[in-house]
Structure formats: structure tokens, C-alpha cells
Length: 267
Image (tube, rainbow, N blue to C red; front, side):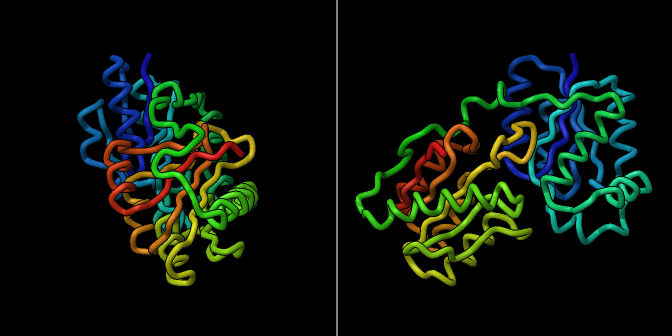
């Protein structure tokens, strides 16, 4: 059985493709130009398209007799919103039909649109179990009671923000919400929060209530820590069981080097 992978930016689609390849899964990959890594080509037959070429993507999977699809990796939300003039007619009709253009609305509607064409989106979790953050401290525990309170407060706010489909990340300090992720993405939110809060902020990331694990699952990795270092943030708290951790060994080394606490929180 063939599986089709729509691969955006980041290591998550690479991780899935590598696991699928090592499990002898026949993979057909549509890699999004200017987003996906060239390395993805190592793990299956690969076609390169812009995210604006909706009809070509559909036709490619049909020509390859692919029925089951996985969609992983980031495609910049800003690019979708501000490059409408580049979209093919199929994509323009699709976007014009949406009630709103929040990330969840777009991604969920893409799945529905492709399901109408006879495709089925499958849960990629079986291939990614090894990178799901578990509950508890991953690196360095917290001694400071104020930081513990900020984690509890921040995770509650992050969950509410995620449920509203505004973003997945908030930056808090001393019981105050400093920054909320919008279309700029997690890293820029963290850096903006650092500029406003100064040293010692807490970064919290959560999934939506009833998170659909087929798309837009929270992800952290070494780049998250780089942004936190720039922001002089102290703690990274993420939702346990619903967050993917990329390059775990490298991530743990960096967190220790930077003195950043990382923990999974059951929400």
C-alpha cells in the first residue's frame, strides 16, 4: 500500500519519511517548494510543487495510485494569506469558499477537499511515537515557585489560545501574558516576548482540545531553544502526549547548555 506525504518545512516530515522508509513503506512525496528539505528525496519518489498548485498535487497522487495521505511540516501561514494571486484556479476556488482563513480552518478544509477526491488522511502517530513528549521534566526541574505558577498559568492560557485557533504558544512572566503567537509563528513569538519581558520568561505550548493528530500538531526542537536563548527565557512547558520533539539528543544537550528547563505537562 502506497502512502502519500505532503511535506512542508522542518524536520517532522523528514522524521516520518525516514521511519516509513526504514519500515519498507512505499512512499510518494509531494515536497512543497521553498519549504521542504532536499533530503526528503532519499526516502521515496518525490515531486516538487508550490503550495499554490493544488490541481497538480491532486493529479500527481492519482497518477501514482495513492489513496492514503499524510500532511506534515509547516507551510508559512503568511504565504498562504498574502500570495493569493499565485494560486491556480482550483486553489483560488477552495480558498474563496472558506468562512475564515485561520490555520485550522485552512488545514481542515484541505483534508476535506482531498477526501472528496477519494483520498484518506491517516494518523501519522504510529510512525512518530518515539518523538512524542511524555509527562514530566525532560531537562532540569524547577525550584522557583514563581516559575511553577507561571507554568500552570501559561499552559491554561496556551490551551485557550489554541482552542481559539489563534496560535499554540504564549510567553508569560509573573502571571502576565507577554506575547501570544499569531501568524508569525512560534519562534518569532518567543523572541518578541523576550524583548517585552526581559530575562526569565516562561514559554508554553499546547494543542487544541480534541487535537486532530493528522495535522498541525505542536512541535518543538533545537530551533525553539535557540529562540529562547535569544529571548533569555527560562522555561519551556509543552502539552504531554500531544507535542512532537525533534532531534531529541541535540535538543537535550542544548537545553542543558543554555540552562533551560523543559517539561511535558498533562493538560
